[in-house]
Every structure is written in C-alpha cells, then in structure tokens.
Image (cartoon, rainbow, N blue to C red; front, side, top):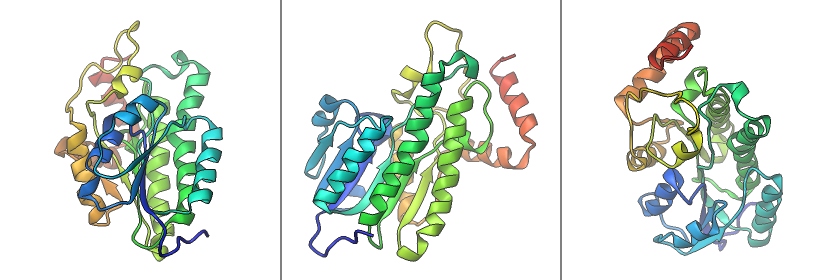
Length: 262
C-alpha cells in the first residue's frame, strides 16, 4: 500500500468529466468537500480545459478503453503520491441495438470502458486512499435485470453494481466507502452514441427522463450517508424492486412488449 503522507496533496479524480454526469459531479464538487486539486479524465482535452471548477484542475486526456491509459494513470499516481479522497468513475457508453447488430469491436470496447476501466481505476487508486475516502461508480437501473437489445450495456452495468457493493464490504475495515449510482433514463450525450440514426429506434417509450443534476444531487446525499447504492426517482426505485421480485423472463417479456420489439 502507498499510504499517503500527512502533507500529501488532497485530490479528487473524475473520469468521464467532459460531459453528462461526470461533468455535473465536477461542477458540484464543493458540495462534497474541499480539494487541493481535481484530476479530470476524458478523451477530449478541449472539453476538459473548458471546465470551470471551484478547485485547481488538472486535465488528463486519457482514453480509458485503452489499457495504455491505465499505465499512464498509475505512473502519475506513483510520481505525485497524492491523497485521493474521492474517485468518481463516470465514463462509459452503450448501444441500443440487437447484440448481433453491433460490431464485435464495439461490444468489446464497451466492456473495456464500462468494466475493465472501472476496475483498473479503483485498483490503481485505492493504495493512495486513506480512511474517509469515497469511490463513486456509475452503474444503471439496467444492472438489476437482463435487457434485450441493450444487452451488453446492461450486463456491464450489472458487473459495476456487483463489483462496487462487494468492494465496499472489502474496504470497510480501511474506512473507504464505495457506492454504485444506478440512474434511470437521464438526458445526457449518452444517447448520441447509444441510438443508431439509420435504424428504427429500439427504445420507443421512456417512462421517465431525469436530469444529470437530479442524479448527482441524490448521489452526493447518499454518499454522505454511507449507502452502497444510490437511485433517484420513484419510478426508478420501483422498477428495480420489481426486477428483484418478479421472474426475469416475465420482466424481459414486459420490456419487449412495452418497446414493441419482436
């Protein structure tokens, strides 16, 4: 363990910080605490440089679907030896298509970014955390059930949910908390990549659509309360509960009928 020294720089690390929930977490960071520096990670350097945060900011243009980025991040940690008080893993993407209609390289890339990157970021960062530190991983309501036509994305988020909750228990003795944020439909740039313009829309009915601000405000509150799951919205919580109680075959049939899928 690379336990931070008493005079180590207190930092927050946020992936996916250039848009959506990652950006909103960065913009509202002072609601959680005070930091000497914030490391913001995303592919688009120009977007990172445009961020106006309450703390000194270090933009890191890493593509976390590429394992080379893990090595670059680990090397930076080893050089700086910071006290990482907060890690937010908000990078990720999905595709709304039948599994076989998505090219294999894109499905594999989804797994790399949504699963492997979160595991790598946590495993590299935890040695630089001390008691009181917090990890926030973005999962999804889709983590609670199999979702045909959003198959791989939902499966990756199920990994994030299970991994985060178990990791929270493993790190309890060290005083480090982990929470999985499980948003319902949220209006972000996620849909720009998820939806294929040249095909009929897979998702035809959204029973609720929330804003990143609503999800993030609830996540801050739940993180401060020491919870291991955060969900905003009555409809989101109800759907997750029903997915636990009802046979998944029935849940999938209902989803297919609701979205008029064959």
